Length: 91
Image (tube, rainbow, N blue to C red):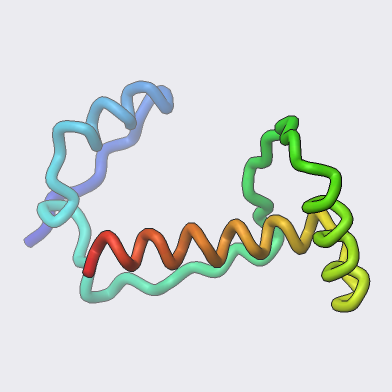
């Protein structure tokens, strides 16, 4: 029998509870279902990035060939490289 999840007076109290509580004592993870939040947008932060002009022009050329904004293409390239690097360090 699993423990009952208490009612919390605030988010701070709930955070305290879950920081100390083993969730397997309260939740049956075998019955858990994946939740899809299609309208949830990730937090973004604006940065300033200095690039050589030739690199920026080449990026714009590649983006134009793919018919995407160059900033979007840069994010795609960064995302792919980060993923590759993370997989390389795990191997």
